[in-house]
Length: 221
Ligand SMILES: Nc1ncnc2c1ncn2[C@@H]1O[C@H](COP(=O)(O)OP(=O)(O)OP(=O)(O)O)[C@@H](O)[C@H]1O
Image 1 (cartoon, rainbow, N blue to C red):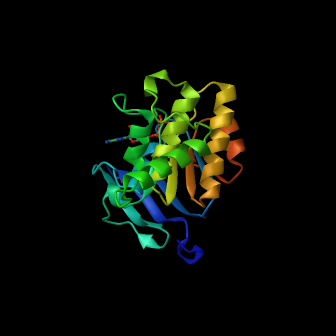
Image 2 (image 1 turned 90 degrees about the vertical axis):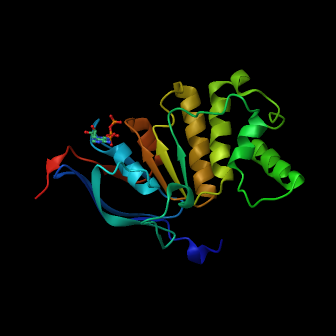
């Protein structure tokens, strides 16, 4: 994709309400390669914000405004057509598939040919230091290795934005820093606008970008 089409993620006058109460409001432009950290107390609407962006918000919420990704208005676009990658706290590799099988799941469906698909998988494994792991059973991987496979499976689908929902919180401190650096480096290398939801000040500091604080819910006027 040419740089001209890289505009990043725009949250244009987004207001999310429930039962007449405003849960959150945000107007922001996350630029390609930028990480915006979203923080706020439990129940303030962090996960809801991500679900609005990805298109899975519960219809019980009223949403005003729009989400635009690389210039494209996502209103009415189904989640699978939005080209947004998500990493959750649980990395959820498919247990019945090998590491390579899990990665194959992330490949774009229009990438044809066994050799080309295999090469893409090998390159992904190499990028995160897991060369030779394609045949491994996910159950035999360490937590950090699983996290790296989950990252690459998501990136193989060639998303244009990245949403991180507390993805590091189950890892111990040393591993957490390692996986976190890898995720941010991958996002920056691909020029992906990234939203990081976290409760952790160290994660926010490592992201090194702006922090958006979602406040406590207030009644809408
Ligand atoms: N489907 C739903 N219907 C009604 N209310 C909901 C629904 N989903 C979430 N909520 C409410 O919306 C508010 C925001 O929830 P959300 O999960 O976005 O918060 P959060 O900031 O991600 O919290 P946490 O940090 O605890 O994960 C909460 O009060 C929650 O109870």
